[in-house]
Image (cartoon, each protein chain N blue to C red):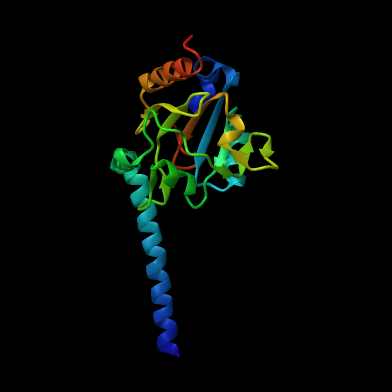
Length: 89
Length: 108
């Protein structure tokens, strides 16, 4: 029991370290991640933009209804994917 | 996103007939509080799980994040411009984006 508790703690510590390491890796390599995403696998110019539905927010708070791309048909839409809130850019 | 806010009038016609949707894997609550603190005029969408990023082919499975890619979608629903990666620290990236938006919206 003692041993298994200790090995459990060891595993948890290992897990925490792995998380920290991967966070560090993200922060350190973020600019190159986009370059690593295969551009031929991404939606191309000339193709229809895939529709989606997901929770939305503005500076005034959470939106009651989910946001769909199709809500904006007939208008120009800019979709800007970004890494993380509270980071630069 | 700061640059989007600061150039919102110039690049996006102040949101008139142009909708800017900023998407990340953050929870909607995190996006709302950040938008509130920074006064961002854009619409934010939470892609927790990365389903939207996968649909667009820009989700990094390794990092568990949507990578920094920008699409312009014309009123007919077709993609007319893609910046991959979007170089958020380069001024000309915004000029080019603004021009793409103007072309998509009817060429003025």
